Image (cartoon, rainbow, N blue to C red):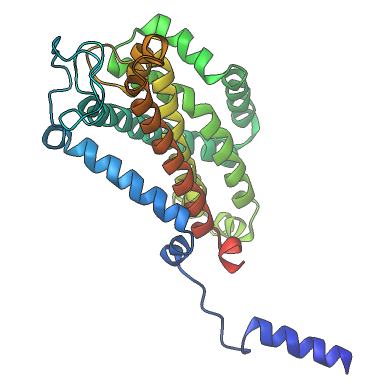
Length: 300
């Protein structure tokens, strides 16, 4: 009787036999995570601000006004002005355009290259995989900021070079992550069946391996956006990224944190908050996206 009762309880928990349970889709899973929805909303808000910065910003972000140097926040300058009399709010809005542009371009390109190399390394294997992973280990042996500083000394500090450097720095970790996911797919029976049917390597990779690691890939992209924004802000803070007078959050921190943290706190405070909120939004969105795309987590 005890065994029968246990079986009935298991059937009841699993649902009616022959009638599979309806599982929530990805958007339903996202709605179940309000923190992820908050991350999406904040990212969309920053993206809209960046897209329409020329219309939203109340002042020219590079225009100086020496009559309004270090003006506290007021009804005219909501975030105050900096040591050149430039409106901090306008520079924060335009700095978001710089940060998101660099972040999305670097993350998308590095993730695409990393996906290609990682899947190829996992599927081809052998000597190619061994050499690829030793190159990846060589890059990963250095912290990202150290590797970026070394490359900046070679390439220079222009905006295209900053994007190129951040892209190169992010590729090795993406290769390692996508390779691990592709290795698990490579050992499945449907890959063996595709090989038995005579499918070529390119067809198997494009139609069977790559689509099945898209969930991991999308989560990696969101994380890389946050990392790219932080790396760009770090380089600009050191004076090796975006150069003045172009607005950038890291550059605004550099110009305000050392000199005005006590006398004019608003100069470094608002760009620092913009960096923090944007990076946290990417992390929140990435976590919710992982939960939405992972069927095991959706079942839970």
